[in-house]
Image (cartoon, rainbow, N blue to C red; front, side, top):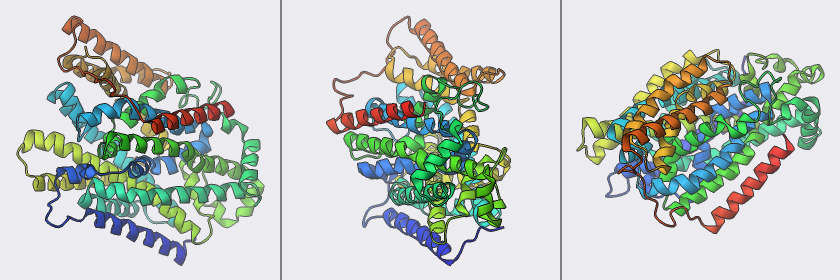
Amino acid sequence: MTTGFHFWDYFIFVAYALLILGVGLWVSRDKTGHQKNAEDYFLASKSLPWWAIGTSLIAANISAEQFIGMSGSGFALGLAIASYEWMAAFTLIIVGKYFLPIFIEKGLYTIPEFVEKRFSTNLKTILAVFWIGLYVFVNLASVLYLGGLAIETIIGVDMIYAVIGLALFAAAYSLYGGLSAVAWTDIIQVVFLVLGGLITTYLALNTVSGGEGVWEGLTVIYREAPDKFHMILDESNPEYKNLPGIGVLVGGLWVANLYYWGFNQYIIQRTLAAKSLKESQKGILLAAGLKLIIPFIVVIPGIAAYVIVNDPELMAGLGEVGRFNVPGPGAADKAYPWLLQFLPTGLKGIAFAALAAAIVSSLASMLNSTSTIFTMDIYKQYINKNASDKLTVNVGRISAAVALIIAAVMAPLLGGIDQAFQFIQEYTGIVSPGILGVFMLGLFWKKTTNKAAIWGALLSIPVAMAFKATDMPWMDQMGLTAVITMLIIVAISLIQNKGKDDPKGIEFEKGLFHTSPLFTIGSFAIMIILVALYAMFW
């Protein structure tokens, strides 16, 4: 069953695809007399302005995980899932003020490179291999799977062909152009992403209100599903295990957020490509501001779908099409694709382009970062230390292609997962606490030793797995794993160095964490809005 795509829908989608490919290839072209080098390919020649960084951060982050997975979680548990987005806004401010100044001052290409400078090559290699595996088998595969699911649901294309199409689309410009192609096309992707999201939100709320508009639609879903508007769930809620009440604000979600936004290569890479630290921090501030509105275009439609599905009168008004691919228990991730069925001709093409933009931009970002880590931290370290710039760039392209092929093979095997967003968070959470502990103490505690960091990273896995055997909510497990990991690192460091500073400990220059008035004022404004949102939907 297809969902009524017509000529103008296909036309808009094809025009979008050609625009992205055209811009991507145009910005990727080699300038006259200049051979593309490693800095050009992996860090966009360190020339990105703040608005490109901010939009690219959001485009890299918002993918099928959010549009499909977070809408599915909105359908299943409500607005509480928005904590991932709203707390990310605060996390971005922390990253911009306290992490970026250190990373940019050290002139990094990759996050594992920081590990080598602060600790050792051995630990860098351990983490580089881990990240490559995580990107290929979890991130790339899950985005391809969710993207394929969406396309299969919306226009009836078989999952396998949808996955192959998405993979080829992302590869067409990102493999050739590197980070420059990814970042500049992300500006266009975000326009489609936000526009398409707003259109779908409008449609869902207008449908709920019987054509009375968005505000009335919000009033209706708040009245009909009040339990879906609690940010802090109580223990009686069936989804408490996924979002454990106040533990969301003071526990493990901080581990997920700080790890993701501060030490995740495919996110942090575009901030390392800034013209300057101030430019990078302005980009971070823009991304934090955009994060405030994301729940309104990915979570609210999921809640609206829940209200529609549970209202026989509204369902009857949707006619025959409404009976296909209906979301429900065990199939929450169908909520967003199901809503797209009801958009009018033309707008359906825009919304579908938005979904594709979210998927493809994230795929491109992950591919570029996977190839950056492999090329700079594995290939140049162990295989060919004297590789020329031309060879380095070609190895980056080949490694990205191999990663994409493996992920495309893995993607269909993820079928049958409900609330894929939660699944991804939970299983990334097994390893993220150990990495967070290594980085936080490596950055801010000069006594941290290399041996302690290695033991902490390795022991964090069995600690996390031990907690898995308990009934404790996984987010609380993640928070406790991070605390235990840091205690292990502290204990071993103190025993090894007998309380002395490690020779590789970071010395902070005076004024390193000073920020511009714009960043400071913007940060306070975002924090005030966050307090208001949590107070409103407590």
